[in-house]
Length: 116
Image (cartoon, rainbow, N blue to C red):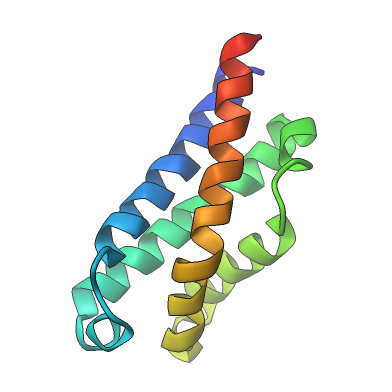
């Protein structure tokens, strides 16, 4: 795996960790009520989507091992371009259900990349 691919995967991992940190011990009601929490979370999703888009160009073999990449990139585009139609409940569900899966997949790829 190239250094660039590792850097992009690390960007995704750090963004996932940040989202989990923001949400730890917090509720959906807190997410809805806290503009800074929402903005920070959405920003990290933008980073994830952009990093995966770049990874697809630099390491197509790696991107194939991450589930739901098209949906992740589409979600990033929705946050960026459709910011006024974001459904907080959808974002919260992704935080709770999808981020841990993505994080685990990226961690596995990074571990395997260390062995190369």
